[in-house]
Length: 166
Image (cartoon, rainbow, N blue to C red; front, side, top):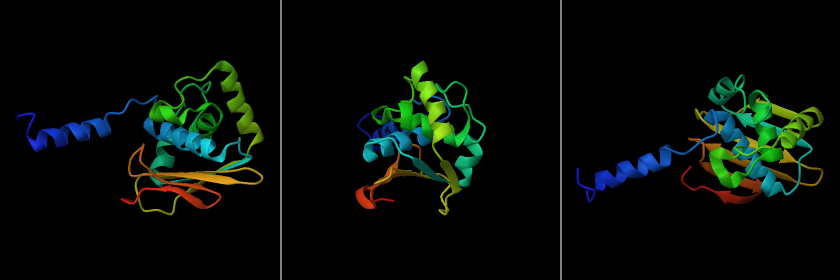
């Protein structure tokens, strides 16, 4: 196949979309990514977190150790890591650089902050929404179909971003 062939470029585009560096198992990292992005939108540390996740995500994350958290496991730890120490600009490497002090903050955040996990009502295999609440505001990030596909970002119920394709 020649590089000038349209099929060649289509294969390259698919590989570029699918081969994204990730820090650990991709489902918990996607949760950390959504949480870090929501934290950036909210602009402050939340006092309450609600996560809606599809069955497949819940199944795949509930017992997984989240990297750089001091061996914490599960959905709640994934979200807390993203909120406390995540860098959303790093996408699936969002928690690749977490200090020991930040690991302690993650544990304290989980002790002090209610984090609720609920089953998503979506029929999608991969669907995740992380909603953060502070006393005066809220922010939500929804990721669907694949681990980096942000389809909706809201702040105080105002739509800041919506992927029209989904």
